[in-house]
Length: 209
Image 1 (cartoon, rainbow, N blue to C red):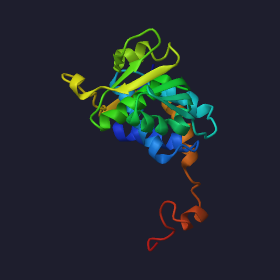
Image 2: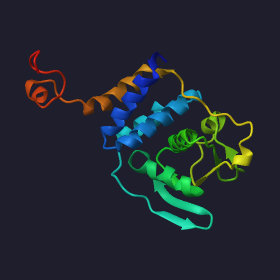
Image 3: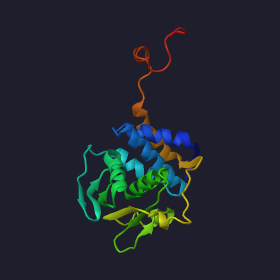
Image 4: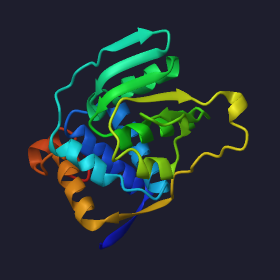
């Protein structure tokens, strides 16, 4: 693998633009970028999970969340279209997701979003007990085991000794994946011509503009 070293800002900005190129809400695009940074901080790939979602985008839908005494249940979460709603429902109660187009990114989205609130997340896979979401778990379980997966916040009394994973200042990214991401990001750019400049894109036509 030929890798390129990127700053956190370069990496995050390109992901946000790529997500917005398929109609992802800007706030969710920022959250997805943070989730990718979490995966990189965990020593796990992020773009290999994100690019298939960009290549085959789904239509924007609103998942049906069924409420019960055990929390919320969603049959399907399409990450780049309605991933933000998953975080909203986790903040209200335990959340079970039967199917997601990328469970690794969904887990990272919930973990990074929870970290911003100073909270931790546990997950329950079929046949497993409640496990703290960490890099070994994301690396070994999420790509190979499908849903349903249940998420819940770690109670304050169980947080003693737990540490948040900090986003890296820089990330090493496969150049092939980085080039593929830029193809999507460039779709958000406007053409460089006189008309677009007159519409306030880029620099003015004269020094007085």
